[in-house]
Structure formats: structure tokens, C-alpha cells
Length: 174
Image (cartoon, rainbow, N blue to C red):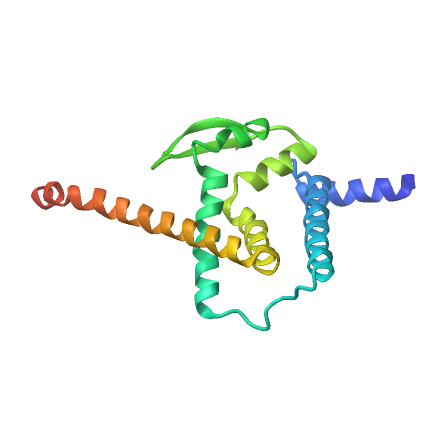
């Protein structure tokens, strides 16, 4: 057992170089993800549900936009910072209601911090949740996805409106 432990540490040391990379924490998170996917699959089977034979382009677009918006809310929104606070430190405002945060801690704590501050990393988890929800609770999942897509559309309109307000200033400067 000690030999295996030593070999695993050698792999981690060889991988991380001068920067600490919590491979054990990442493995734990991958295990949690695999367990959640397996659990959702077992629950679906127990309820007699199955994956759709195919997803329509509209469904994929709805889930893509909803996943994008949900991950931005979870990873960057100022209002959701209390959920990230145990594994992050405030590093500044990022504009438009978003914050910049630094991951803190080591091991699993650091791994969780990297997951919850990275919209790209969270997208896999969130989209998996939407797919599982589409099988287990399709009406609720579609409603949540539609709401998040509407919020995304509203965000785009807010940004366009703000940009349009500054067009006369830019025209005078240009």
C-alpha cells in the first residue's frame, strides 16, 4: 500500500511542477460526478424513464443557452458569492453584476474552488443536470431552462441598450 501511495505522489509531483495541483481533489470530484450520473441513471430506470432517442436542435439550443446562463450565475454572480465564499476570496468587481474571486485552500477545498469559479468547468455538471432533469422531470426542467434563456436574452438587451446610450459619445470622439 505504501508503494502505491508513493507512486501516486510521484505522479502528482511530476505533473504539477512548481504549482500545486490538487489531483486527488479532482479525482474525488470526478467520482462525485460519476456517482451522480449513475444515481440519476438508476433513478430513471426505476421510474421507467429513458433518454430520448434524439434531441431536437431547439432542445439543444435551449439547453446550451440555459447552461451558459446558469453557469455564469453560479460561478460569477455577485449575489451567489456566499455559496463560493468557503472556497474563494473576493478579488474585485468584474462589471455587470459579476465578481472576480481567487481560489483558496488546498486539496479538495482547492479543487471545489476551481470548479465553482469556472463557468466552463461547471457547464459539464449543469448540462448533465439539465439532461437528467429532462428525463426525470421534463416539464420543470424545460421551464427552468426557458427562464434562464429569457434571463440571458434580457442580459443581451441590457448590454445592447447600455452600448447604444454611448453611441453619440463615441461618434463625437471618432
